[in-house]
Image (cartoon, rainbow, N blue to C red):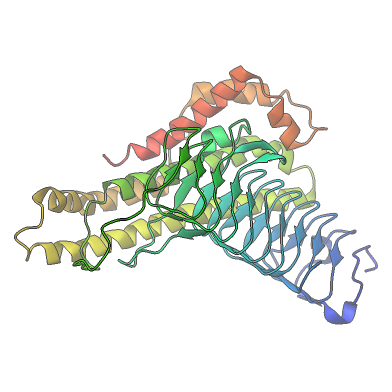
Length: 394
């Protein structure tokens, strides 16, 4: 309080003694019921904690002007002017970029929102990356009461979904995506920019054509069917979508290291968010590799069962055997990541323009000023990182 932190009711606020005082900026408001924990927690100027309900902030990096109105926030990173309503449950691996937001009662884990992405109320949206939109008024949206289904009846979680992408999404010039409320998306799926998925439906497939309204078909073959939870069918799409997702995380990590750093290391709190964001992306990469490894273990059990079934398609058995056999090598390549010189010519062309941007403007304004040639170079560079990763498994 002597440093200028606003605590209207000190008796009702808990602050971990191990947190250095400078980690909480002057001007921060900590309302009654706030619990601030973890030595990695930093809270930047103008941020408000617990305006609507008690809030626990644990090992989070909070930027400038962030509002966390109530709930539980752990091992997550919130960039400038992002916000979450009361009842939030935000867990490890979550990164909200500038002006991304959620209404009340939102659950996120291993989820990344690029700038402006907005989600409604009563939402469970774990294991996703979402982009799209050009500003706060033209943003990608997830309607209220929406679920991303990230756990299958076969008890695997190789299910991360890519809504938009990184190579185009970071340029902040693509049409928004709208996922209609009272619906759901079954991962792992890929959704193109400009997509509108009608409200009240469950999407079970990739939607790759841009700027289309998609109304998922109603399931008509209901009733009882034979189903063995341990027996897998084709995993080609599952594995491919996972590799593409990991490639996008590699691209975003590179973007933070070589592009974002210029605007996020100018003050203590922004620098903490930059380091936190890199950690969140790295955690996401590790999580996806771990879940693919668990899928391999389940495929091994599936093969044992299929060998006892004469009618099990041979091409599926060959597919499973091939992925299991290749996995040790693939795992090592994924852990190593793309070579540093991937897309080097387009990278250098983009960075040459980026270095000319004025540091007195915001990151969002700097991105808006990139010329079309620079955008093409930057997108091509990041896409080459995605393509390299996707090509590791044929």
